[in-house]
Image (tube, rainbow, N blue to C red):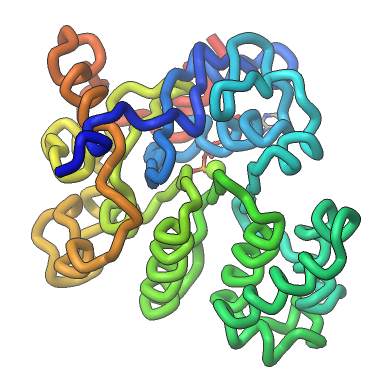
Length: 312
Ligand SMILES: Nc1ncnc2c1ncn2[C@@H]1O[C@H](COP(=O)(O)OP(=O)(O)OP(=O)(O)O)[C@@H](O)[C@H]1O
Ligand SMILES: [Mg+2]
């Protein structure tokens, strides 16, 4: 191991005491976490926990009421979306939201508008690289996006984000509604993006998918990160408790995996750009008092109850 391997990794993203909401309803009650450069971090949590609002606040779509979002050491908390995109943040929204009437290429162009404005030939190269990475999109470049399959739309949403040449990609529930074979393809595509140097913050309901892809898992409950751990050091019982019994019921139905959180064999083969960047911080976390690891009892509130609690 070289001496460099011991150097503390840079934080691509640092979210500190982030608070926001809508009207009188506070949704984020002080969210704290970091994502190291080169890492894939996954936020897991029940419906309504505030995962998407966290992503939107980082992307600049929802304004922060308090707290800060730093990107490679620079505060972005007050920046408009466009400036965040220019700095290197891309957001693949929940539900993918491709423009169905526009062609595949027109959709991609929307993601690359900043680069295209600055340098058309660079955009052309990036677009060509995108079609190389996703050949099916190349074949369907003139087809209305609304006619693509769900899996192809998922790839299009990724391509639209990637064409802005991001350093950090926020990817919100990319597997929702996709068949297992497409989920595998998506996992490989995201792993490749990460190997190419893009840091990823992922939100997922599909726990096995997230555990297979991510280096670190963060669990969100009612607008706060209540637990975080490297995936290969995960405390399964705590995860099960933090995620609630519903997660348990979902996962075994997928087949052979006896443990919802046991990463499938493929996981180890999934190539990564570099090892999880946060050896030191994790060691620190482990030494922290019980507070960080304290989670709610296994019976998690249903969405409505959670909403009521949040409104308190
Ligand atoms: N635009 C909005 N206006 C009012 N309330 C909102 C808005 N967006 C989100 N919320 C509320 O904020 C809370 C958190 O929503 P969020 O979308 O972040 O949940 P989530 O963790 O992403 O859930 P899911 O897993 O279902 O996607 C919910 O109670 C939701 O109703
Ligand atoms: Mg969501």
